[in-house]
Amino acid sequence: MNNKSTFSKTWFVDIDGTILQDKTNDEIDKIIEEYGDDSYLHEVPIQDSIDFFRSIPKRDRIVLTTARTRDHINHTIEALDYFKMPYDDYVFDLGSGPRILVNDIKPKGNIGNTSDLDTAYSINVERNEPNIKYQYKKIDGTINYQMEATPIIKQLINE
Ligand SMILES: [Mg+2]
Image (cartoon, rainbow, N blue to C red):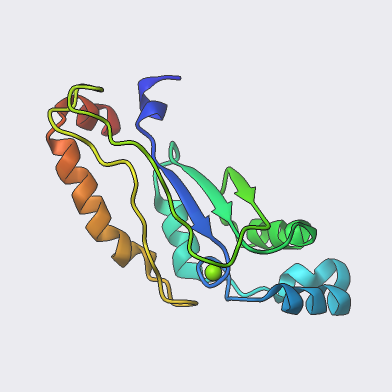
């Protein structure tokens, strides 16, 4: 793994209410039953979110996370591909409760950093009106602030 991929970010991104207008598994069952192979055309994209994820660096990874059941994978992936949502992987069948991301702090000096680096962040967005770009601004500021204390990483990220 080269240095660039070492410092890439990984995004765990919800689907319903975040990338597509919120639908329940029951609602998806109904549109699959009614429209068959064309069911994906009955999903509604949240274009601002898709545009945001199309704008992040290509080296970043996107893992979609959803409480949609596995029998809805084909329908959902067809919709996401149709709306040109980028992603590297996906996890279906998650719970509908809160999602908690856990990661260890990179201690000072670990990767040439001159102070400890936080490695876990989260964003809560309004359903169907997520405005991720605005919400992420604050986190991006914090990350950049920490990176500024780490000229080696900053240089690699900007390459
Ligand atoms: Mg959701």
